[in-house]
Length: 511
Image 1: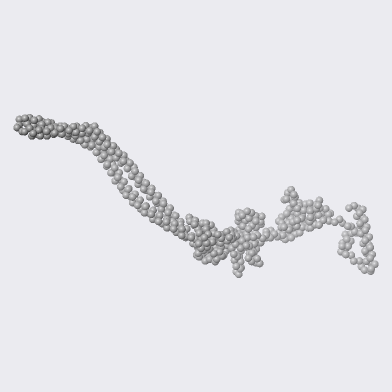
Image 2: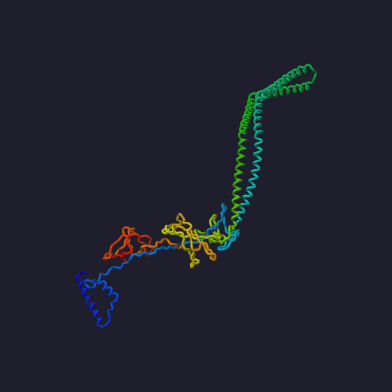
């Protein structure tokens, strides 16, 4: 805006004011200048008595020193610190069929039956193992007696073997030195006897012939006697021939074969004796191994029976304490709900060993488990106490102290804070799994220099560099780098860059 135009406007305004004052005095009343006119007169330079119209300035705001406090509210759940997860702790039996389901929400006393499982099959299995164990014990006892007898008979058998071996050698020697020579002599004597009988018969025949020639015997009688003598000679010839063959057979066949047979029999017997000297102790060793195997099998059967007997006790689940029974489980106070376990815990449902399906909550000691987003972890670590509100009773607030914070994340980007709280005597303990909120002061500063968050801008190339636009006394706009502290959605703490006396533009200038 140039000087000529400003000068014309000043003249017009001066004339207008003079006209107004004249009208007031003509009516006989005192001048009544409104606040805006008064301010205009005050701002009018006294040296030239003219009003000056200033150029319109952009909207601005001054930083304010205030008590700055950031309050955070986090969600969580109530956890029963004495809660007992319940499962069927069967080590070896897997057929876990529900025949009497548990009652959700029931108040339980210690020792009360919570649930029953089908135990008929496991009982039959235990009985079969008992029968197997009895039969195995009988086999073991028999084998023990056999081993004991074999050990006692072993030296006797070995001694008998040595004696038989000795007798075999003696029999062979006796056969070769006595029996065979005697048999040879016997067949030879038999041959000689028949030869002598033949000579005797021949001599008798000759004598008969000579005698019959001199005697007066009839011819018929002579022929009979002579024929008998001739027959005897034929018999003797046959006997002599047979005896010769026996001698020949003895010398060529019977004698060498008898020696060979007896020698082979003795050798075979010696080999058998030698084998028995090795096999008899080995047989006892095998029996001992069999006994060891039976002992091992007995241990296995006893172990199986013991395990199944112990598992049989778990077919009836009893309460370990007094409390309230819940279907499902709790993780850091959050209840799973009964839905995932409905099919398992109903009658006829099948369970898995060591899988928690029930939770018993005594309800005497509770604490709060607060979910801490990772972005608030640093702030929460400095907190000692705050105010807890139970969703079941939102009108009341109670003091809660932070006992500890999980050292590792419990889920992606989330940690857990554990709170202890005490309630008045007339207040009831909140139920396990119920929701709650925890409010605490995350940051507090008494004299914090604050600006609205929307008047602070960041560089496009580096969001860490923040700045504001400062309005100087001369009306100029200056871009200034600032350092910020904690912030909320509405205000931001300024730690460096401007003072409380300076004005900051509310909006980013066009250029």
